[in-house]
Amino acid sequence: MSYIGRFAPSPSGPLHFGSLVAALGSYFQAKAKNGKWLVRIEDLDPPREMPGASELILKTLEAYQLHWDGDVVYQSQRHDLYQSQIDTWLKSGQAYYCQCTRKQIKDSGGFYTGTCRDRHLSDSGNNAIRLKMTAPVYQFDDQKHGLLEIPASLADEDFIIKRRDGLYAYNLAVVLDDIEQGVTEVVRGADLIEPTGRQISLYKMLSKQPVSYLHLPLALGDNGQKLSKQNHAPAIDNSNPKPALLDAMRFLGFEIAKDIEQLDISEIIAWGVKTWQLQQLPDSTEITPRFSNSSL
Ligand code: GLU
Image (cartoon, rainbow, N blue to C red; front, side, top):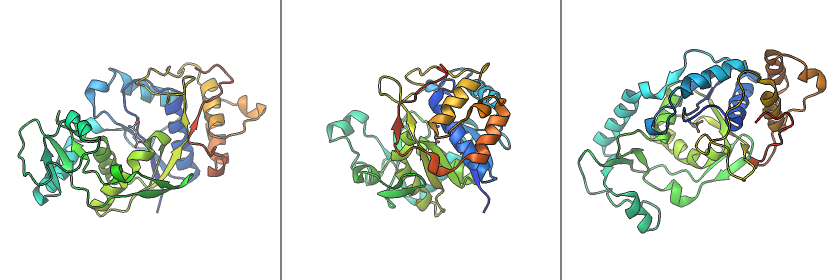
């Protein structure tokens, strides 16, 4: 089977160092296997989006010579795919409406325990839709980290597939898209280890073969927090990509000699594809990067 990987940024802001690491890791893994590398813009949550971020992200990928295969896919244009699966599950009784508020769930211990499962509520226009969890996943095999455990309380939960505000849930959209796009392996940051169990549950409930997973170390800021668009991690430089590129590649375990540093961006990327191997990745899931070239 031929390899298909992807990079799936949410356009909540420009790419920062952490998202560059995810883009590069998924790119090297795909291209080292002679595979395809797709880009999917995960614009599912308009209130959290920054106007212009999608275009900016694509420009940044181009500046770093990360060229995707095929057309960019936008989740905002795929609501029919998500809704039709939800309708199928509502019809079969696998999904149901739920009127519990976040506060009610918090007050009853933090986990949803199936309060509305058998209440046969209808669509009030203000109800979430949950999936009856009949295929919980308590552990999965990660290409780098081996067997990773998922807490049972999380794995067993009837999680939300469509929110009460009408937005489609991330887990559902990601899995339906990865299936529809033929993705064979998901390479992304270690912050997404936890939802992976739910995503594998979805594959099982859809009777599909799950993808394989590789979680890359997460870049932390000086404050020990994950670098993220939400906490305003600085954008990486489009006009002078080399410093951030070299730092991000070192973060991914490349040893870069002086002569490689002298090459131009596309040559450095090609060298990365040629030399990339999984063993070079650091073992830990969270790392505070050292920036040698003031790339931030
Ligand atoms: N859109 C998600 C993010 O930007 C990534 C989803 C994924 O790779 O599965 O954090």
